[in-house]
Amino acid sequence: MDEKGRIVIPEEERKALGLEPGMTLQLERKGKELIIRKVISFEEFSSKLKGCITKKGSKEEIKPLELKTIWEKNV
Figure (tube, rainbow, N blue to C red):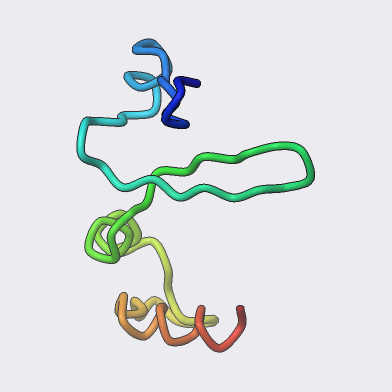
C-alpha cells in the first residue's frame, strides 16, 4: 500500500479475474480481512442468467426483472 492508501492488484490476479482499468470494485470488511469483488452490472448479470432459470414445475423462463424482484424480496 502506498502513502495515499492505494493498493496494487498484481497483473496475474487482474487477468485471472478479468479486471480492467476503470472497473468498479466493491470492498467489504470481515473482521481483519478486506474482500474485493468485481461489481457486475444488472445487464451483465441478467444476460448471463437468461434461459437458465425457469418457474417451478414449468419450462417458462423467468424474466430478468422478475428475478430481480424475487431476489430483492428475499434478501
